Amino acid sequence: MHILLVEDELGIIQFLKQGLEEEGYTITTATDGVEGFELIQNTSFDLILLDWMLPKMSGIDLCKAIRITDSKVPILFLTAKDTVQETVEGLKAGANDYIKKPFSFEELVERIKIHFRNQILEDILTLGTIAINKTKHYVTVDKAPVSLTQREFELLYYLIKNKGKVCTRNQIIEDVWDIHFEYDTGVIDVFINGIRKKLNLKIEEDYIKTVRGVGYIANEHEG
Image 1 (cartoon, one colour):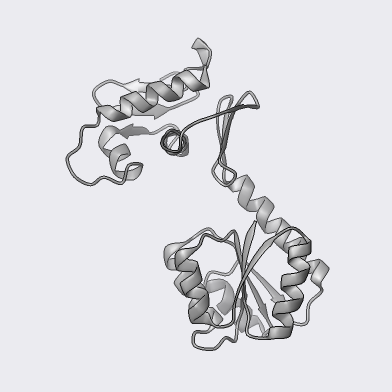
Image 2 (image 1 turned 90 degrees about the horizontal axis):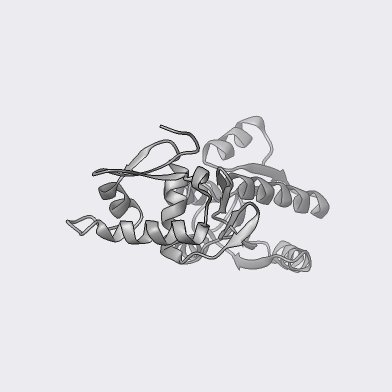
């Protein structure tokens, strides 16, 4: 898991970087809010540790900026501010957690683990015997791994995420292919056939159904 630490106190940076790397995490650091924001724009992080009082851009402003483009990455404030009003301000800005300085390293590690567990659980979707995990990028059928291409994975995840809803071909082209002009949607049928073949489901497990002339629906029930 890749963690971004945005902190301007070098002693804390060195202490946390060494400790968290020993716990098995990959750590990238930034010493001011602007540098942190630039890193976030160009790199995908699994969790962000964020100081409140930062040069150039405050932790609060950086947190708000992150939430504009990323609604899911866990953000933990590390700060000496501890009034109820300040805590509420941090949570309203989009933070998931709040740890007061000075803090126990062991407590920080446990809180990080909790947020990672929650994130992984949120990213696991199921459809009958199919399970798909976006974070770890795997698909299983009856707990047996299935190898899909990137596009097949994205299409299956989209259908399962919208389980019970009819997904039109135009919606799929726009949301999965990111194409916003007239395009031959017949390519979707090719990918659906490929997914069905690789999943190798039993007849009674026909979870991905064709809605003739419209699109597809992922459903565990008849109808």
